[in-house]
Amino acid sequence: MTTATKTLWKIDPTHSEVQFKVKHLVISTVTGSFGSYNGQIEVDGQDFENATASFTADINSITTNNEDRDQHLKSDDFFNAEEYPQLKFESKNFQKTSDGEYKVIGDLTIRDVTKEIELEVVHGGTVGDPYGQTKAGFEVSGTINRKEFGLSWSAVTEAGNVVVGDKINLQLNVQLIQN
Image 1 (tube, rainbow, N blue to C red):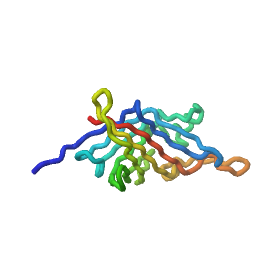
Image 2: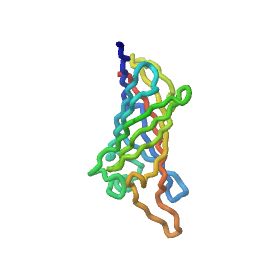
Image 3: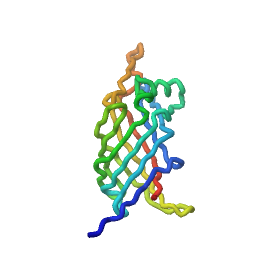
Image 4: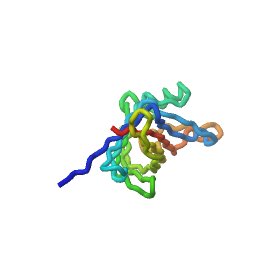
């Protein structure tokens, strides 16, 4: 009996970004990001189909280029970073949908709420870098409803506009290093 060799890939944070976008006052979009995160993919063989992926982001590393807004996001109105310092994702299914494209289903945990989400993943390619490392690039996207994860703070302006939209667009551009 032979067993396939498992290959571990880890996120290279110096060549990656983890962003989210949300509507503000219904008329514009605010972009935020996490500066501290970890993630990895484990695969059998050379293809990423049926891989297992895990990811964590430190809530205190959130930034939207506005310190007051960042502090509000870290408060109990939103993430409650003091009690829930990380968000987590664990894949359950990593399915190839076409050449270089995958659908990933997994559990996202924010605060104390875990929900199954679906992400679209595009593999941009795998190359060797000048330092002898093998790297793979991915674009990951998806949409969640923040209120389903306990991020339920809401306000309405005098004109009746919602201050923060419910739909959060996730956008991760990650480069992985083969270990």
